[in-house]
Image (cartoon, rainbow, N blue to C red; front, side, top):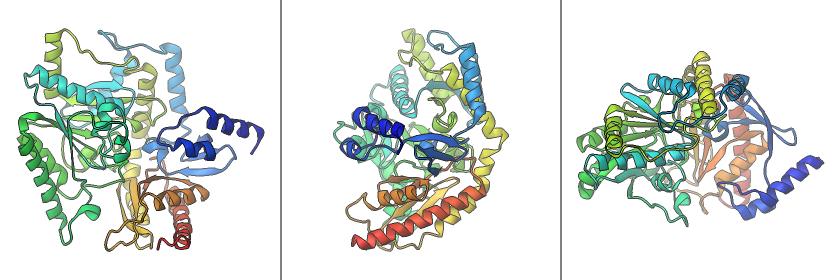
Length: 460
């Protein structure tokens, strides 16, 4: 390690607080410092190359070296580096991006509100839903329905919607009225002998029973990721989403699709809701909206939601919510160029074309002694570790094996992420068939290293 790297490591260990990190362990271990990127690959301060098979944090659709996005940002910085959208102010990039999002999202979603992150967006959704129900004279209709292992962010409201223990513990969450329903993962949570259709029916019955028990007049919205991401890449069982949509419509409950990870082709369709056959009242997107080159998120709503909000702003003479950087002109300019690249290079089509190669390639590890299930769709997948596949018995202690697999992946030049006992994959949408083959090869070597380690540790 050279002098500059030593200095950076020491400074980071002495001064930085990292998200999703054991900070005491970080004081000992220090960071992996990434210094550059090219396409689907990144490089650390030692010059080592990695395939970034999680696209950063599920987000870098166009890869790590797209100069068009840098140029779009620079040109906008020269023209108008910042302006807000409060009190009737506007600028062209946010206007054009809102127009583009309405064009790309499912029919009927016609209005756009910008925030800086998915967490802020879902937090805003909560406030919007409360605001519109108060305006409609329904002050009791405030509860949310979400799912265990769902991920919707980390602010107080969005963190409450998230169904992960690690995001609640010692943060005093949930802090808003939310009920978490069962995780829609057939392999992990079905009963013995239960068919997929029976599992779906049981989950839909749980949803309707919960609504009736709580009172439909008290439940405002159901929020879910079409494919659950940070909870372990959980794909829904057949018929689940159309059933959820039907029940929500029956009881006048708004349906919110959290497409922060799913959106813009990740699942092999434009949006996850289209992949699974439902149309939400509210769609939330971020991450691949700008390939995370700039912080930006968007909430796209239908006319029913917009009109209820707009009518209440007329009563109150305003909407007391917004962010300094809502619809930031540079972020919106980057978003527009990013979406243009996705369309021009047919990256959504690329995800669809590579899906069988990627998914079938990972499923070849389904019989590996460490693997319980391989699941996924499009260019997103999870490989769940299990001590006994037949009985779905996890390793003890929980959360030990998958992180070790991820550690061995890094040794092999592959960056993936451990989510409890699942190894998550979400490569940039620019990946080629050759990239996918190399991801599979590196993962296979890492998995075999982990098997040797697990046997030495007495875990098998």
